[in-house]
Length: 265
Image 1 (tube, rainbow, N blue to C red):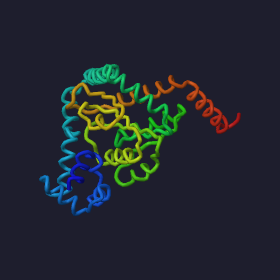
Image 2: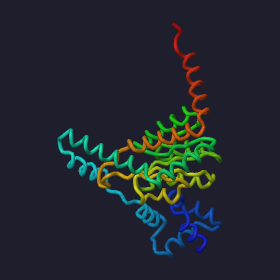
Image 3: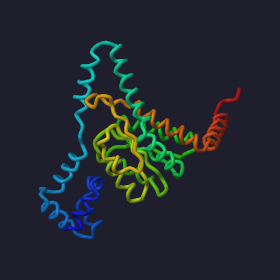
Image 4: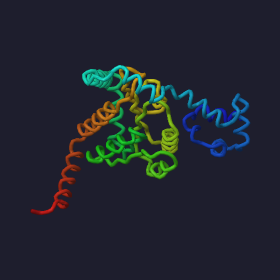
């Protein structure tokens, strides 16, 4: 029971996506011992424990409440909408230039420059950005893939992850089940994580080897995704600056292939 308790304590994010049988296998115990341990420390069962862990990680308001707060501020005036956008983006870009984020970006570029491949993780709107980022890295000479499916179909993407890869994770708040599964797979394969988050309370900061925090100007308002795109594009430029020959060679190859595809005049 002590082995089980210590495992859960040290692997909170992985526990969210694991069954009692999986935890038992990892700790060389039985699923009955796992359940007894969970109950001994005050939970009714594994589900209760996971809900408590999620509550520890999750500190966000509902999207509806955030949108209501945002629209009440901008009212029906296009000018106030512009002011809101400028303030939010300017705040994020100023944060990107802060010393801790500069250090995070340097570490991220260092990790990515030595990666076999780059995985970009995100769901929902962040999943769309993940696809864009994967294409961006690939065009720059760094093979990349997205990890943006939800539910059990994510497993088909996670099997692409291999030793020597690096995963960039996009997070706005809670560590959802897809993110937990991605973290667990990265830990299994010793794959470094880079976190781009909008809150300094994100659990990804403690997990990732490099982290960049781009907080919103007002935490109770709707999350905008442009800062993450800017951050990813900055990473791409940083990689290009670190090894200019690689993106140039890749882009030249892309042009050659395009010329084959274009109809001849």
